[in-house]
Length: 72
Image (cartoon, rainbow, N blue to C red; front, side, top):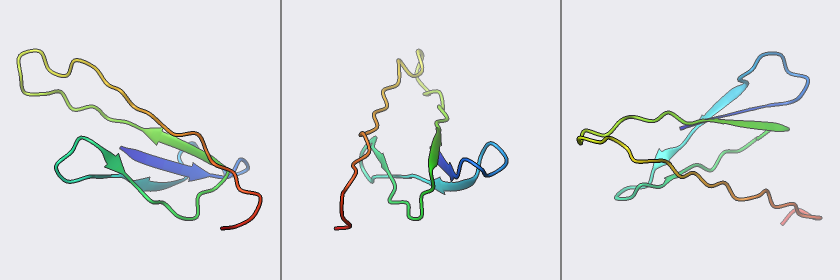
């Protein structure tokens, strides 16, 4: 999974990339990016499983952004 960030006025479709890392021993991925810009885009690449049926589905969840009146 890769994330991209850019400002509206920046040319191109990708912008600056940032990566996610797999949390050891789990199926969860995380990142703590800094310097995010106005727009954020995610690219999720699925790799088929080795079993007979492969992956049965995918579930991805993103928490809504949290806005603060003051820096904490």
